Length: 208
Image 1: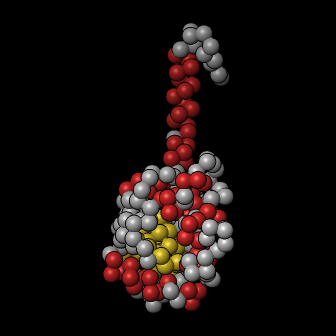
Image 2 (image 1 turned 180 degrees about the vertical axis):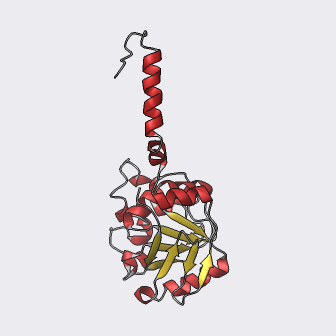
């Protein structure tokens, strides 16, 4: 998993509440277990019409938001089903951080497991960031995870809270597998010990 340290990028304003996971990535695209290739279907029903043509009024179909790495939304982002494909689609599109007043719990957890930083901020602050984001390429927002700050284009620094353990995992780029592999030496030693102690069992191979 790619570490998240500091990100300065264009932010896309999405002034919508209760954006559910089916809106983020519709169920018909859940046939794959691959994490790549889902970005093109992110917000599919919002981005495309019935003929598959882009809706020009949707923010991610506009410049410079086609290249946004930050998404700003309203309350209850990521509600609905627990599909992990939702953060996969966001990440594959290029979104590394979602800022909203609050998130659905399962979506919130899945973001951390996939290298996306979900930032909770009060609605009044969200509204200010929305206005910043509307300025497009001339208004980039910075996310400093180590300092736990969102930096507005005018230089104002806004603190956000995050669980210390989850912060560590993002900074070091550790998903569930990465956390396990940190203990690889201990795991190998334990398995070698078990093989020695149970060498009398048929099929147990004792390695030097």
